[in-house]
Length: 148
Length: 71
Image (cartoon, rainbow over all chains, first blue to last red; front, side, top):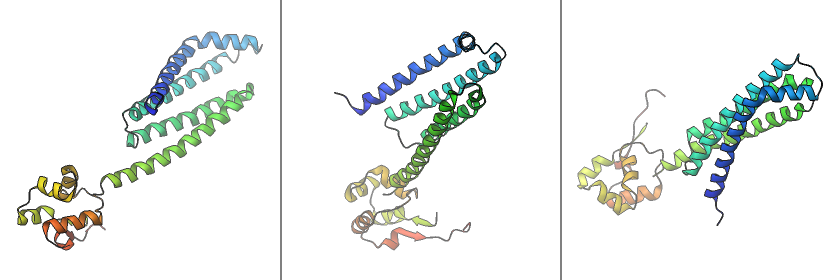
């Protein structure tokens, strides 16, 4: 029977699979950037900048995925309203904002990236609001726990 | 904390153990410990009522206001 515990476990498995994929992308990044530049016939002058952008995004993605992993692990143990979870959500939100910022210069040469920039910024904003909600919930829970 | 819970004083006067008091008022010993050690942020009227009933006292015997010098 499908339940919340299994759903969290599935999310955790997906998170770890994406972690492996991000590491794979980082390893294959030079070849992928080279192939992209060749495909778009943009020449090799933007290679370093694009490769740097991909690496920075990979680092941000790994930080975000690690935070997501910790968050899901805490939720799996029924520890939802914790200061630590607020910290992980804050980190996730900042990773999205930073990814949007890092991708912004690249979006001027590859216009399709503007969609990713806007999406990352919007997700960062949503996560920030969720963080604010959880932060308030942590305070309320602490008050409730200490009401005898 | 400006409100002090003097539960241990009144418990000693009535010769009540923490375990017995917790059972009689229907809260866990862990929650009674939070209350006794002034860690509680709020006390429900129902809990205060039970405390007063079991310990045969007034709310003022349990709770005391001490002026906070920092505020």
